[in-house]
Image (cartoon, rainbow, N blue to C red; front, top):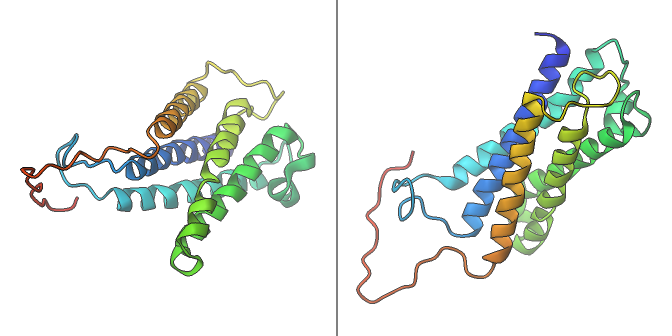
Length: 200
């Protein structure tokens, strides 16, 4: 496996975990219950959401760092931090850098949510939507071979990103349509509480 392959795999991993993190966040915001719904077992969605965020941030940071060790085309540190004049696809790379900075804002604000307060944290958390849009844009349009800037959109990696994009769009539409309602069941006087099950 070459450094270029590693860079691509890290990018695909970042996209996959960012998408999974979005889906978990949507489920939490809609009050999805894995006990009441599938898989009918108590899962700690907050823990899963937290760790997919850690993985997404780690992979998103290491993905462009690999470019510093590739000889051709040559990427400088400035081209990684602010790729306005990167040797290949500067606009597409700028979208990726902007996505990284937005995700860092969301991630750091989540770590500090008790200090900054819930209202500010909640508003900053909405930045995940433009961040994901920029990630999908960057991931689809980037040439993984760093040759001519014309990616093969039917490549296996691109198809994976396109599926992630579709899932992200569908989840966002569902979340928007169900705003204010969520998945909370209607309470009735005869309803019995669900038995507690061990966390996974």
